Length: 111
Length: 112
Image (cartoon, rainbow over all chains, first blue to last red; front, top):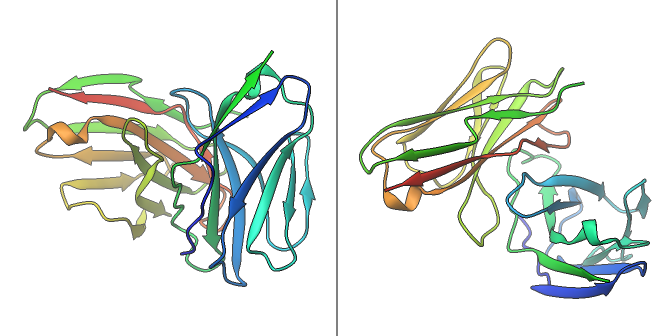
């Protein structure tokens, strides 16, 4: 499975957009990009996922580069409640029973 | 619709003991995956159950075992507990193995 690289931490001002990057340079054509977040000591919360096209839902937008080697999760208007560890995960369409979480990015939203 | 639930929320055991953790999957989900999350790290995949059969396993020793029941709830059993087994144990369910996984709140296990 492809590995992901994320910055260990990022800061964002409340009300501004938070843009969280993820590198997955060894991703293969049948692998999806998933994003989860984990607020302190709680279970991870699903945010969004995509294969090739950009995706948007009520929580966030996912922008995947054309070569699929990197992606960005966008929280359009960050609030204090968005402070969490954000995990970018690459998951095979066929070997789908394993999620490799990595260390994630700690997003600190500040007033 | 009820989400994924886990019990107990917290547990303290001593080294060498055995523990059973329980997970109820989200309504309509027939797949359950278990993860171990040590302090400060991301979750590590233990194994997955699909329709009562093991459907993949991570790099964990055989003393980590599981069950899935006809109602798709699941148990994680850990024998001969070691200090390093202290962690947050997470259960996730999905409609089928290839669909999105939804996580429960976790069980925090402390081994003394």
